[in-house]
Length: 601
Image 1: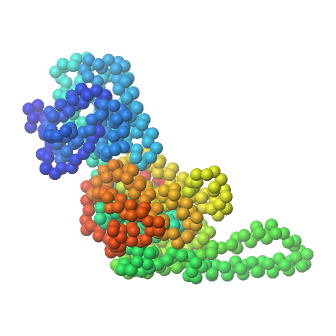
Image 2: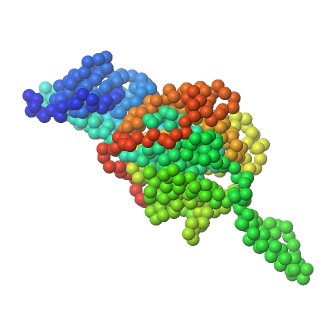
Image 3: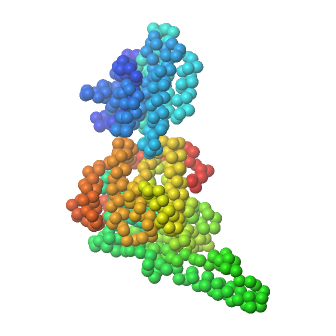
């Protein structure tokens, strides 16, 4: 108990968590006054060292002080901060009307720069910003507080330990009283991220999309804690992503799947090919009915023509019989292959028996609604059949019949199901979207490629625009969610856009995916390290950087080049038995309840 009667918080243990706070004040004297008052807070211990470090409750608080707005903005792109503290308080004697305006303009400049961040995933969430104000009871101060609240600032705290009328008033609380309130509010905001789950969301993109997602996940596997890729709390897959997440949720490692495609011996997955030019993939049965209908219609038309009852017009023939064209391939062989892999080696072809929750997105062909297999009542369908439905993309594949309904590719109605992950309480989400358009440098390049390439690029553009718009909207309104997206670099998009069903260039796409994913990780690593630490994960890029140098040094990569020193490892993943679990139960962000329509995603 302090001499002023205030109760000190619980004692701090020797190994409490460290929180980094960016403190901004336009004057160094104001910062010194703030830290001096912190030393008088009950239970606060100033720690030695060059940084401003304090021990309070169960935390070590490290303050980085900046007095110039541009420096405060710049440091947020270099290091991870759990909180930003903007001190606008004026010293006693300078609290006249209008004195607050220059301070407010400086802080507004910082907020404007943060708000204008072009990469929405690097935008610092305003919910983790605390602003301190003081001054007379004027409309100027009230308007400032209201404007900061409208911008989504986490807390605006008014210093009640000062009085512009009588600074020596004996009724004023001690300065450390307000400082303790600041610390308590800061800790409450910083602990909001504790809780929630982590999810992996993989989008579609054809066979080349499967290759990209495997290469990207191999890079993530080499950067994150051992077993992290196979220990997500939830998996979401659409089309190509359904295939990949189906393997992961069943306990297969990324290297095992890549080894199966590369015919690498020693793994649990036997060699397999994604080539469509094989008899089991041909939709021969579907041609019988159209041919029968065409021959019957042609015979009737010829008879009517001979009787003079009907005239022959090529236009009418084309319009009347265009629906006789059917998809040349079926997904049944893929479904059978997945069923075989999911019923051996301890895997499960049952959503209810999977090691980790898995949700597969597909589209009801008749209602045009998105269906989430793995969620009741669609959790009674075998996993392999759900994946088969999710990859049934027209015009290449025919629809998949399940019961009395017909399903086609999930990408028709969704690009990614990260909103569903948020609804189920995930606040750390990794999203991989390989289905993005190629952007040529020369005008007219796409025009000369032909109708099939143009159609493919148009569909990719629609899909990615839907993903990008939804991602921007969601992260602006829910900054408490950490979403990291991994997309193909433009140089590899060209290869993937030639033919999304081309099964041959898997090594080339794996390399492009690995390098572009590492490039993204290096750009956001200062933020990612802090965000994933809430979930007990670590990020180290040394291993991935060594593999990247190896991949860059060869003209044609081999499967062994994706491993350190070329030593292939296709063993089962080393999934940790337990991880740091959330201290609070997961809950969906406000505004993402059952009534929220995520069709735009």
